[in-house]
Length: 172
Ligand code: S3P
Image (cartoon, rainbow, N blue to C red; front, side, top):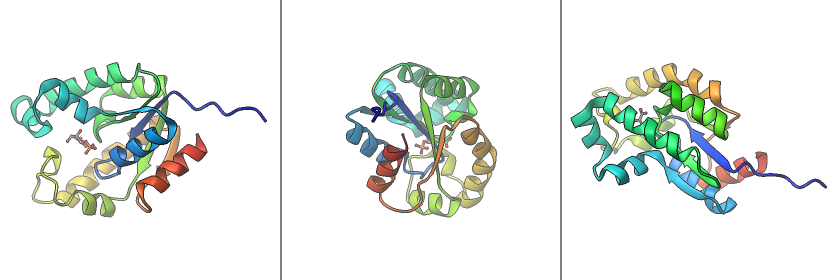
């Protein structure tokens, strides 16, 4: 039987609360790849938190930092990269992600996103009086963008991260 060749760069996209970080970490450990989360990488490089960057530089400043980090990380090998939920709104990110590796869209309904993010204070876009409406609006804008660049769409709302990672591994 021909040996399966696992792609050397795997990029996870999807909304806040999709489980990109937990699933990505699990998948990377199964494949023996390095795992990086673009938000953590921005925080590591700047030495400040994401909410802090939004406060001082606005969303636009954050998007510039995010694009620089994604451009760098998408060139590395043997990597699982979890991207921030809004990364796909920047055209250069969409280009880099789709050209340089396999893109997996972790689809999660808004109801589940809401449950998973409800006690969160680290996501500036959710500090709204109506987070459900916010998540719905974001989903409406972004779902077509996630699908546009996805090689694979995986439903990530049910089951543990381990199970989802196994499902992804089986389809690679
Ligand atoms: C954002 C999602 C966050 C983070 C930032 C903006 C978004 O990442 O990048 O708060 O625009 O949806 P997660 O999807 O990892 O929560």
